[in-house]
Length: 344
Ligand SMILES: Nc1ncnc2c1ncn2[C@@H]1O[C@H](COP(=O)(O)OP(=O)(O)OP(=O)(O)O)[C@@H](O)[C@H]1O
Image (cartoon, rainbow, N blue to C red; front, side, top):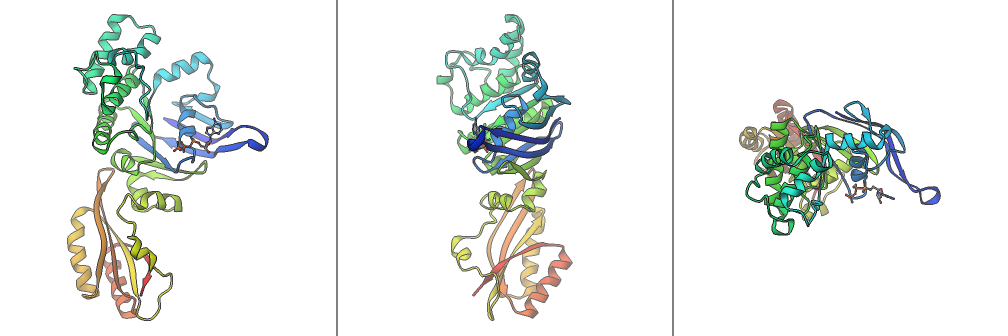
């Protein structure tokens, strides 16, 4: 639905020139919820703003449904923006307008009469759960309610694509979950494609079917969320995900970790389980097969893009016969393993 082909974006000229995007190739599938993650300043906002023509690529092509955004006239851009809704971190509502009138705004701009507008806005208010708040002003609404108005406004022109720029970053965790549930429902019920940028890994883990990782203007990794989150390849992805997945080591352990084993050391291994049911029996068997001298140091079962996934960090003696037993067990069970290092 959206394609980036060799997209580069420079800001400024000469000595102050800055390359915000550097040869981005990326595809956003129809009906998918795609999350773009990256550190602050990586280029996420610039990337998303190219999709609705708020920024123009310096080179390369951005297309929405086959139409090149950079080549559109002002009229063409207005048409595109009816097809592409956007929601923002700080909601961007007009404080002088009620919830109803904020949602009505894009329809007024599109030239609809009052009756047609009312026929659209009523159901949208119901869809976002604000049927009883039509006449409230933004100052009378909570953050979550304001974002619901923002979502309804973005949906007013029946877009095919919704862009979300840190839409839950200003909300508390509970409200975030309710907004994410709403976005998921809209995606499923209206078949709306969603492209979101966020610095919150939890958001991606909860709703994104696909993810792209951006680092200093380049896409360094992209694919299905479950695959990327369970087996991140790029260093940036690993570091972004470390604190989210319960796979990061406690400081006291990390501090003493060595790359090489000395006599008498213990090896630290991270095991990855797919499917919650595998967790218990495999943990028990691990201890039985390797020997009782196994410490379980960290572990968690979580859900990524709707699928259960578990990790366990264990330590046991780095003696050749123990390592051989462990390797046999891993090969038999197909467990994914990663050696984290050695401790005295
Ligand atoms: N109009 C501009 N003029 C000059 N530099 C810009 C402009 N807009 C963005 N940049 C620079 O481009 C880089 C990418 O910015 P962008 O806002 O896309 O990053 P981001 O990943 O969205 O960051 P954040 O998570 O902090 O919002 C940053 O270094 C930023 O300073």
